Length: 134
View 1: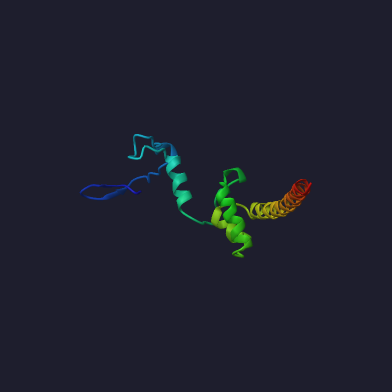
View 2: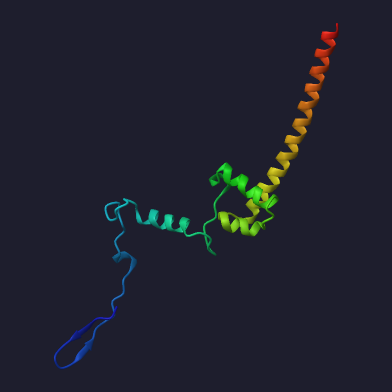
């Protein structure tokens, strides 16, 4: 911001004032109607802004289970690239890969467990039939 002092006979240019971060007061909960701090407002704006080139990536522990399931579904069923999913959910592509791999391993484990349970049920039913026939 440039300041000028005016006199009737000439204009004298004064020194340019610069604002430093120290001169700007930090907002407090009293300064805004929502009662939030400046950093809380900034974090909310970043989270609501959507996809950007630079963002702070979220960790696995910060992702709810529904989001994890949506990520896996988007990759396996909707065939969306890992990079696009990572940008959308603000996570790394490695995390997308890890979630998909875990889901695939879990589905094979679940299939094996279902087969074992089915065999056990058949054995129990066979034993019941043998007991009834006696």
